[in-house]
Image (cartoon, one colour):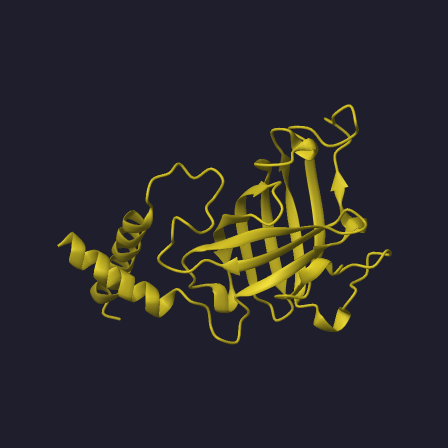
Length: 218
């Protein structure tokens, strides 16, 4: 029974979890250094933000690959380097944790990120950010609208580095199903295999929805 349930849920996921073909499933973000605002305290002796320091920042969403090979997506005055390519606005707010701005590896930020596309679609993720350059980190998608509304999964963030003005450059892509343990994981991942439980929860949720619709005669 459980095997059949999981197989049915996997089929449903395949049919419904991927976003529409005309919506980008991968994109880059260039943080605008003129819109990075951090709290005055707490900070380390070297002035870098310490554990508990709050911040908010914004930047530009670009097509995937725009920021490859060290390309800087923001000009010195904070305007986009490639205005004709901008897909929308990225907003990030949260707190530095652990070693904060002095971290070189592992979790250094807990944040919420909002991707607001120019066509009105939005994606919201919330989770960890890691200080490691070039290492993929899975962030749960906690809300979405437009063509992303039916997506069941997470968004993988890979930090490409920091530009000449200390703004973040990162690339993002939706995770594939089923999630492979060898791929990106949330930095707080405990080591258990989440695939079966996630499939069962998803299937049960859809079954409940179908039962409600059947009972109401729709």
